Length: 90
Image (cartoon, rainbow, N blue to C red; front, side, top):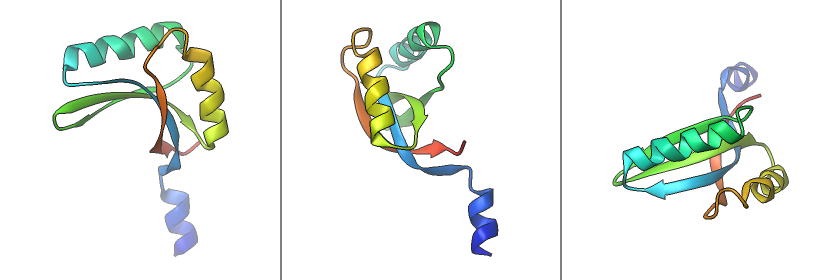
């Protein structure tokens, strides 16, 4: 039963890079759009935790993978940081 449960899980613990945090939906949508224009191969997710929107990108299994990507995008997105999150299973 445990094996079957784990095979059917779609989310696993991992890391993402947060590129926006604020209370305006429009700005969150714009941040996601801007990111996807520059990095169309990556996934970007908007979540809402009252009263703020968060735009997080990527599905990284390790903090090192997230760190490498964070350094790559830091010049284009100034207030980014790495966060633990439930990521999509690859």
